[in-house]
Image (cartoon, rainbow, N blue to C red; front, side, top):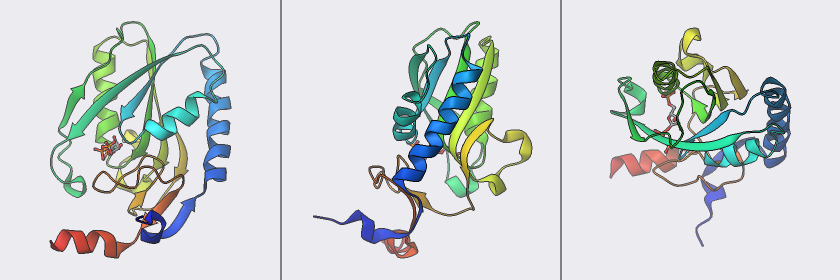
Length: 186
Ligand code: PRP
């Protein structure tokens, strides 16, 4: 069997650490939404694991939604052109929306979603990302809530992928450079 752990340089956030942080975020967000029923929206696929853990720490009334967006071009040179591939199932008008992301990198995805939701007359839009690559976007594109700040490193696990793989690792870790450099040469 292929051993995914062997491709990891360093574990950044263990299962226990992730669980504890989800609980803290859940408490903070439950308080904010105690008198409303937000549409908690996971951005597929990366946010799927964080979404599943976070919603179980939210004690307030809520409904689920899932969307899929994609950005054109390479991540490192993101053009900021975002395309909605699977739209919201819910009507947004007058609703409170909590967008759940695995990571905020350039910030373009969250910017696009916030603009779109306000155009659709949402009552409020907040964002929560597990990981915040704080050096990779300007302050005004930052997420409202986040689990952890990280440096500009290649992280996988807990929903985050490299070429579609590693999402099932129960922790967040830095991928060994040799894994993607080897692949990129092919
Ligand atoms: C990742 C991540 C965010 C986005 C963040 O998605 O899940 O949606 O990139 O990047 P940004 O801040 O630069 O916009 P990706 O396109 O890799 O798809 P995935 O969620 O299916 O992994």
